[in-house]
Length: 131
Image 1 (cartoon, rainbow, N blue to C red):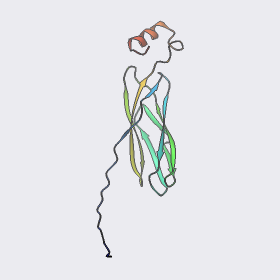
Image 2 (cartoon, rainbow, N blue to C red):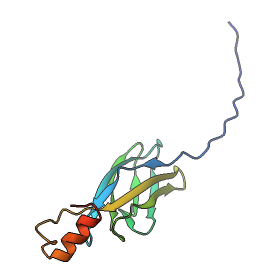
Image 3 (spheres, helix red, strand yellow):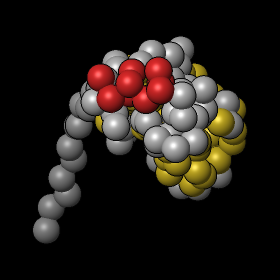
Image 4 (cartoon, helix red, strand yellow):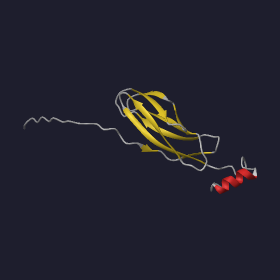
C-alpha cells in the first residue's frame, strides 16, 4: 500500500436567501412566524438579527452552543391595505456567517363582525376582495 497526499483548495460562497411563508395580520395588529434557527458550527457562536421596516425579529442578539438551536419570532406589522409587503430578516455571526430570510406580509380581514361593523369599512373590505 502506498500513501497519498491531496491538496484541496476550497472556496466558500454565501448561501442564498430562504423564503418564509407569508405572514398575515389585521390592520393595527401584529402577525408572527416562528423560525427554527440552528448554529451550523461545532463551537459557540454569537448572532445578531436585523429586519427591514415592517418586519422585526426577536431576540435581536443571542448566543448558541455547538450545533445548538433556538426559535426566533419574526413579526409583521401591516403598513398598507391591499398590497403584499416584502422585506427580509438577516441573522449574522462573525464566525458562522450570514443567513438571509425573505419575508412577505399582507393585511387579512378577519373582522366581518368585530371591527368592520360600520358599513364604510365593510364596503372597503369588500371592494378590496377581503370579505
